[in-house]
Length: 95
Length: 432
Image (cartoon, rainbow over all chains, first blue to last red; front, top):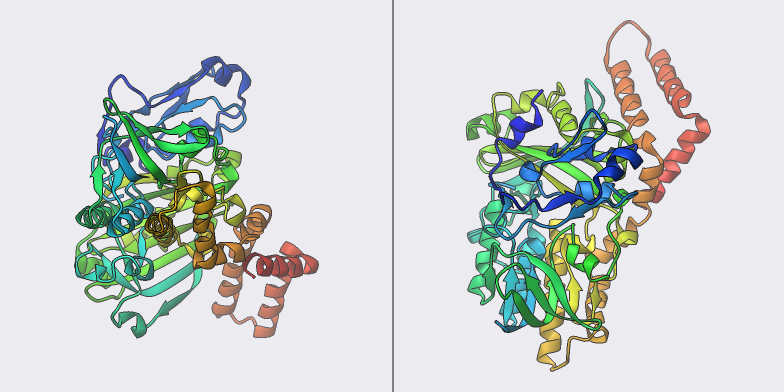
């Protein structure tokens, strides 16, 4: 089975270094008050990972800009989600 | 930079391009804003193009549009872990011009469609993200972009910004989309020599096949899979409701990899080279999930308005049609010298109601809810069907009457007599 990193390796991006377009509003909320942490399972680009201490880490470089993380965080609304700046982010060759 | 346009169109997908083209043809001064590097570079679709919708906008599209293959065969498969049962419909009628459906690659098609809008007189600026709508009270008067001095004014704005319509939510036009109203689809494109594709699918040059799939491929979730033939590639993917992904904690790419390894699917893509992986949300809430789509100085078209007919796998044609109708509304009002007030723009709603868009969505208004509540259609029935076929087809010395009895018993054991009748009724209600 392919790892998601191997899939994303085929994709073209222009990463807006230093300007992530998605962020977690309150990191403590993920660690202490969210038992599901569905973002760490359902993000199709695997941008969210859970560390041993329950901390959720978000790295947006591989983001496919689908919107899943924002919508499934419907209990806590803890995802600050904007589009990347114009021209940045995923650049689909085929779509 | 206080420029002012008649209309600003946000987005250069199917709805946005249809709107920009129609507005420009109607003589309006139109600015289209796209956040991607080029039109299409942010857009994801299966993708099948339905000729009828584009034909109503650009009648001779076949002469120039980048099309992959016209479809001559439709396969519908219901899968369990090791088999599929299904129907194939192939007709020479689909080989008669003008062709009815084509596979397309969105990054290519959208560039062409946008070029037509620009040729008609629309101004498109790319690599520009609209961050919010400019409001005067309740009236939309323009947009704010992420460019320097990026406020641009217009008499009306068409929001064709896709399923994640942030602008409408920020402006308070409607609430955030719910997990139960949207499907997450993941897909890959696999390249193979043209002759290999034609041999594997028993098709000639330019002919194509569609496979739509349901059953255990969605791992018990409400969802479907697909496989489409392009000229030199195959796109395949799987999509399920986001509420189910959330509840069942399924990793989307693992689901896709499992689909690709299914014994009925793996041989079709064997030896191919995967060149892109994509994910996208599809609004599947249907009729009851459609928000208010017009107001003072604004209209919503395409996925942003949840205009997708999930059961028939139609979305891009609804996007093009709603984009066209939104634009026609503005053109007609402009020609009549009427302002773009909410009252006047209600004409868009009447146009929608008179079109196949709302008629079809209304027909299937109960479907999402019934399928949400009855997962047996995605789990139990595919297995029962497969076992029934296996029992009937395998020649093993058991007499046919006994075989039929065992099939009947398997259905009753799984769902009970009353359950079977109820399921038949529910299925009928869903599609009635």
